[in-house]
Length: 351
Image (cartoon, rainbow, N blue to C red; front, side, top):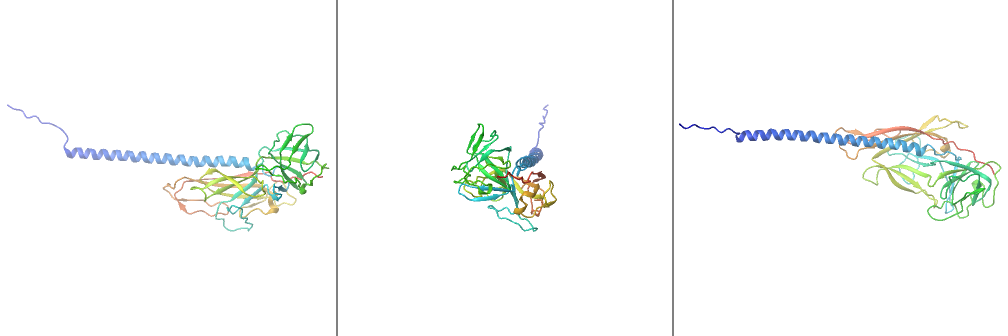
């Protein structure tokens, strides 16, 4: 008697169903992984934005907090071409145009980032004239920590006259020399005179102590948001050399994806001036008579992501006198902080 053997297995339909279910499971797992990867990438980018803001806050505190320290009300430069300029320790521009387009009109709506020029002093060193000085050198009590190419301010009355050191002699007495010299480090005019500070050639013996403040090698600096040169907005750092009497900066990128910077300044309106401010201004440039009256800066910075891949539409927030932007898909982070500055002009010595 023959027995029939039944062979078990999957039918074609069952296999197709199994493959279909497996593909659904794999696709679901892939989508979950994709979402997880994108979320992790977005979180990392947002974290980077916040780190950029924290770093900028620390940098700007260090760079700005010393602006104006040890300087008189009028900071005067005589450049290599003989031109004369009076510059402020701090200047805020309500118009983002470069070269500068001043805006002294109160009120209104701002349509672009603000930017700032400042005198970066770094580690301030101060010495004073010992016996005499003239258009080419000064005898000083100490030349320690002064070096060739340092920019210094000779403080006489209401003026700080800017010189660039070319020679340091560490003897008794010590000498700082600032005779004229060409090249990119040149800052002193060919005749070395600086009438605002009283020296036009001959030796001068001050009747009251004349201090000399070290400002560093390139103290004239700026921060500005560049929204046109690069694919993404960039906070730029500018250095102004002054050797030809111009106001041109050499710009280098500092931080990418900085979308906006808004600046308000606290002005001391007291007469005579005291140690505190009493009026916040955010809608114009400081006027020349207000330069030495700025006591604090309120700085708001906004960073945004590289790509517009946020599923939720957001807008650049409004700060100071600038309105909010249009809705888009960028991720953003923002920060506001205050920098107190010692921007109270000193009175220099007398001749």
